[in-house]
Length: 427
Image 1 (cartoon, rainbow, N blue to C red):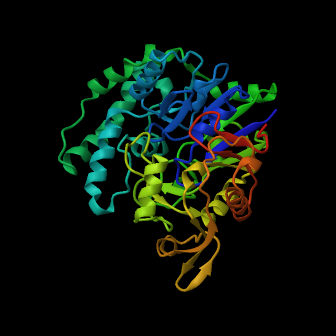
Image 2 (cartoon, rainbow, N blue to C red; image 1 turned 60 degrees about the vertical axis):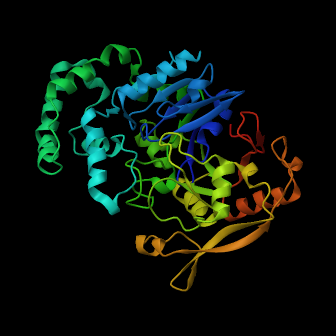
Image 3 (cartoon, rainbow, N blue to C red; image 1 turned 30 degrees about the horizontal axis):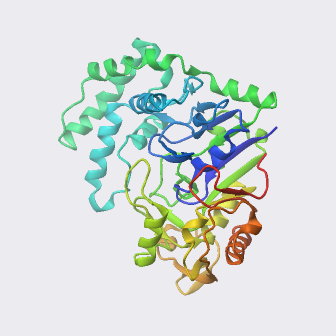
């Protein structure tokens, strides 16, 4: 039985929650392997809509064990609030497992994130202000605090003191902010120990054993390929690796155990925050996509920037992730356009470029080269098979598949759990 990676093939917000939920009934474990509560998923089950920020989407599937891997940064207050909110709605959250090696987001991380972003002014990156970047920075600088540290007060205090010796200097002398008190931070963090203790496990061992026993494990990335800190539109990226390689480092499961890598691809393109976006629409079409698609960030509440489908980005995602399949989402949003442009290449300094340029300067100056495909006006939300789609919708999907370099194995034709056309099985 397979181990699968499911990730965003654009700038995030592609509908990964819907895809994960679709597989939930056939999957034994769903694992978040990077990011934090800066990534949101919306999952619609019947007439119920769930907004998940930190928890894996599999928590909504009975029989599935949700896991937060070591590559995630965890804000304990946010996690407990999210668990409580789901429990109040009758969702069983008792099976959740959290890696003891996952790093914690502390109060000083969120403070530093917000003040440093304001300090950058026009050069700001567009972070969510939730402490993600500073927490990952501490991890790399080897001064981070891990989940397991909550259960050893002496170690926890030593780590907080060491972190604040430096950070309070920065807050006071650079940002003119009040120093953060060590005792207050330690007391707050210790207060989470009892409530989180029952969830903490050696998740690397659990997941490897599950795969060896033939169980199905789904690794769920947050954000998207173009927000990867190594392979995205740096510096307008997140602080972790949403690409497929991050699933291995973020869980402790080796690459030879992964059998399929599924890219979630929106039928058009969106992104949140600052950074280059070649197909962005600043006109009525952009506003129409935003309105019909409900393009507002689940976690941030910010309007998403909208544009036409970008095949250059899709090909890049196929390459850097080794994608075996695409799940195309939100095809229904395009219903009603007479003609639909698709970006097939870029023009940079008068030259046609068909692959994503490695140079940040070139990408900032890239102009989309469009081909226009015929649209459709028929309602597609009730379609259950590919043949039930209007001919022009079929042609659109086939064109995107050919341009993107991997087969489209499922198509989202509406927000509902059952509004999906399955072409090829992922399992």
